[in-house]
Image (cartoon, rainbow, N blue to C red):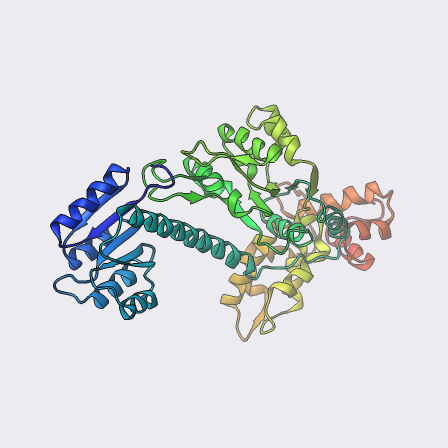
Length: 448
């Protein structure tokens, strides 16, 4: 069904008048349902999503005012046009206050009623688009953790964000799961000229493959089973703003040319439509996959990879910014909570394979178990506390999460030719902290 056709419910008890209306609208391609009862009309609207309901004010049973009120309350997305043979200003005002789109006095040309129905259909579409946009704005306003960190890797990342954010170039954020890629996307958008509009977000891994295209590009009414109304996609919602495509490595290969075309010339089509639409959208994408390997394996288009990878931001895992763990703990915990030194040390010494997401979950768990608003070692998972009671590392570090942290310290010391001050700066910790960790992991001067 094309954009200017609609589903209409006629509620009229005059058989001659209603049959003439039905013939007219069916002749012009619209889908028409008819009933003579107000109660039946309310029931039918509960079973089917009509674009427009044309109601006779003077039906037997319910009063015109009560009928219109119940229709609007039970079917807020259906536009209502009221018909009456006794047009009065009072009735018109009464109807409009209830939310009626239009008030028409009999007799009238059928072409005039069809024109009013088209105008009602346009208002319905605009209301749906506005609702979707408000949902996006609400999501963008939800509080989220700020980018926290004083380590060298985080300072370097923030400097790059400051340079790339004001441009309109595509950005690819790469990093392990749980490192905070969406926060980086928010920082890029906030520093851009598009920041007055909401950041629009989609996670390709969270959508069934058959719905990804519709979510990104929208669809027309009737494009597939269940498509009861034309719906704009997130590219249209993000027009003149930024679209954050999380887990872009999960994007189906068949859809990648369509995404590439939008990035190249801003043109796209909704599912089920031949109409070209143009959008102005900046793309920020993220992945925990190595897209270069995906290209080599034939699972990701090379031309799309280079299009989204104009600027690449590498988000360091938490084990490479251990100096930030304590800052993150203080930021995540509310003012009503505190953490004792042994528990803090256990968190700082842990390797965090799940990164910041794991840290947040760990603190949430600890708050449930803790007494008197103080988190202790006893409130932490066992794997995080074993080393706190045994400072000396096991003889064989294979399989120990501490091995990752130890290996990182050795790597940085080697890179810096044993310069502990410089190694501490790279690791994001002070020199005394580095000495303590070297002692904990059995790293003497000869190892450095």
